[in-house]
Length: 409
Image 1 (cartoon, rainbow, N blue to C red):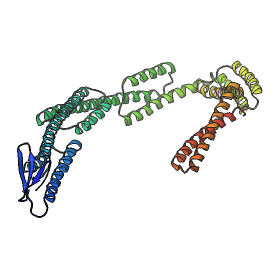
Image 2: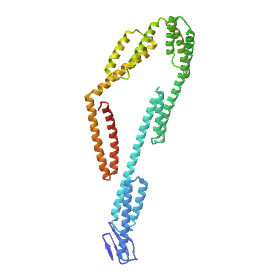
Image 3: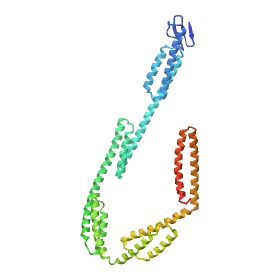
Image 4: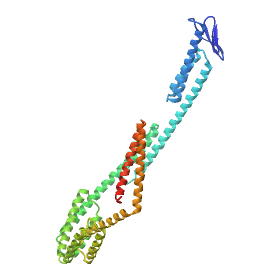
C-alpha cells in the first residue's frame, strides 16, 4: 500500500483522496505500482489547478461574459466534485467560490457601467435636443444649418436608449430641424420677394436717371441725382445679376451728366489745370531723387521741391489723388532711407545682432561636435536627431548673419 498527505492506494489498487468529509474513492489502478497510481491522479489534480488558474486570468483580464464564465466554473466544479484527482480538492472549491463571487461582482459592475452609459447617452441626447430646439428659432441661417447637420452626426455616434425614450427624443430632435428648415425656406422666399420689389423700384430709378442724363439744368439736376442715389440705397438689393446690371446703367447715366457739366466748367478750371502741369513737373523732379544715394543731399533737394509745391494752388479734384500720391511716395522713400540709415548706424541694434550671431554659431559648433561623436560611437539614431536639429540652427544662423550684414558687419 502507498500513500501521501492527500491520498492513498490500498492492496486492491483502489485509489482514495482525503477530504474534510473523509476518504473518497478516486478510481482503480491495476497497470503499475501504487506510486504510479498516485502520481497519475496527482497530475490530474495539477491539471485542474492549471485550468482554474487560466479561468481566473480570463475573468480578470478579458471581457469574458458572465454566462460563459459561469458555464466554465460549473464544468470545473463538476470535475472537482467527482473526485477523480488527488490533492486539496477543498482549496479548489474555495477558489471556484471566489471566482463565482468575482464573476458576480463583474456582472454587477458591467450592469452599472451599462446603466451609466445609458444615462450618459440620455443626457447627451437631451442636450442635443435642447440645442436643436434653441437653434430652431435662430436666424443665423448658414451657421445654424451647419450646426444642426453636425448635431445629426453626433446623434448617430451615440448609443441607442430603450426604444420608447429614444423615439421620443428623436421626435423632438427631428421636429426642431424641420421647424428651422421651414422658417429658413420662408425667410428666403420673403427675401426673394423683397429683392424682386427692389428690382422694380431700381428699374424706375434707372429710367429717371437716364432721362436726366442730357439735362443742362446743372444745379437742380445734380440735386435730383443726389436724391435718386438716396432712394437707390433705401430700396435694398435686388438679385445679384439684376443688381449689377442696374447699377451699371444708373451710374452710367450720372457719369454722362456730370461729365457734361465738367466740360461746361472746363474754362473755370483752366487755372487748376495749369497748376497740375507745374506740380507734375515738380513730381518728376522729385522722383529723380530716387533711389536715394546721398541721403543728406536728397533731403535738402526734396525740401526745396516741397516748398515750391506748397506755393502752387489747387489742382483738379479728379487728378489730386494721383499727383499727391506720387509726391507722397517720394517722401516715404526718403523717410524709409532715413530709418534704414538709423538702423544701420545704431550701435545697440548692431551689438544685439552680433551677440545673437555669436550664440547661434556656438550652438551650431556644439551640435556638430555632438553629432560627430554620436556618429563615431555608432549611435546613428542620436546622430541623425542631432543633425536634424543642427540644420535648424544653421538656418537661424544664416538669417542672423544676413541681418548682421545690414549693419555693415
